[in-house]
Image (cartoon, rainbow, N blue to C red; front, side, top):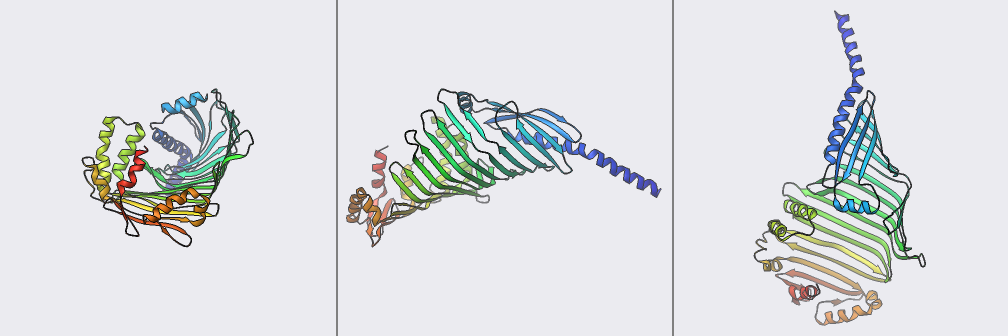
Length: 421
């Protein structure tokens, strides 16, 4: 009897091993099918055209069709297809599926290699070989891309991490202009939730330039540019916070050069439900009708009622030897209610602070600034120091209160801006 049990156990183990690739194939098909269904959105539809599952491997054919009319029109104008078929060769591993995917009947050298665990978590690598394309829409433009890659992982819960590497992109226009981007690197970690990204993303670029045919010298150029974005959601309070940072080592324009540009901007304590609703409405129709505007008003009311703030944590730059620095914060206190019935409540409710600095050299290099500064000194709005000029003020009860004690109604400062609209 003991020998029979041993033989039975061995036989069961052998049978499980023999059947395991089939089980992996079945589980993998379910994972892939569910994943394809989740890709469907308002921009693109996806479907599995054919799934030929074998013992150790499978072949999958998936169709992607553009739905957005603006994208379709642009693709058709550039003589590009609006429907794509992807062929994937899938291997059944012990605890995972490996796939190699490429585009069918399309001269675009993009391949994707992925490893999907049986729980659905996936590691992927997208590789684009050197690619050249010339549009045929009457406004000829040539695009050249060096070998590029996108690597990352995505979980079944939607958590995504990625690393992007594009050595160079060049656009040559029939009119002779040339646009070049080089040294592009990016990375991110987070997930798309409730209509916005939660997590961190960054994009760095060594050089961006635009040159004219006449001399092939850059008429506009950015070196060492970087953008960083982070956002978080307080689920208990339903508040959204985000931060944007932009920096450039230098920027050359026809009007001059700017160096060491840095910008740090934040939005915080935003009611996430109201913000999500407004973003959804705007994305579905940027040119909102009167009825849609009326539907948006309750969400705007909620934003102001819950309160929020906008803050320029810092902005600085150099022009030659001149320097400029500024920071400000504007807050809408919680409890700012019924603004649609009485918009005049907004200005008295606002709280804020401002600090700005101009160096002496900046004023010397740009004389047109001097006249305005002289007038502001007389009005006790600007204070002159040994190294330059500074403005410091607070916003309180619809008045801008300067460090000198001088007060100016906020509306008096806004009217010239509004009159220009």
